Length: 233
Image (cartoon, helix red, strand yellow):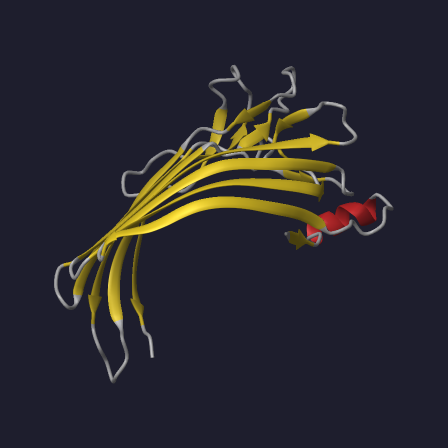
């Protein structure tokens, strides 16, 4: 059983509406899973869960990317999902993959619309990490992420208020690290490329919507190159 207090935005919304401070939001998590080491360097985990939520403070994620919070505890919901994870590791290679499928629904006690997708609904995610230790000092790290888009409220003028999904999100990162021990520290220098293939990932919709399937979009940043030094002592 988990509880969560209202955040600053939710408290401000309640204050502006002249309402009392919202109650603690609650969640009951029921989880069933299996975790097994197939051998010393390979393991996996499978987990299914049901999260029952009540006394929620609902919010809307608009197509513009804006988040609009309710001023009171006005909703309940549930999240159902399955998650698979596997890891492999030896002296030179580390690999990890996580695949998750979920559905999040919400029922607002006041709007009369019944059950609908929650703004937290994201049907599928896949995350992979691979690290290759080429020598005692040199390593290469590759990461890839895929996520189906979060749900949003289609509030464009002249269109019905339907819960739709942003486009899928895809990104691959690469990082090369070289250890440089200095004065007893575990220091390293690195070169990192984020969004290696410059995928066009939508952050929000903007402008005139030609039709519900091809809106204009605001995009997240394209390829980013970072170089740096990390020092641990």
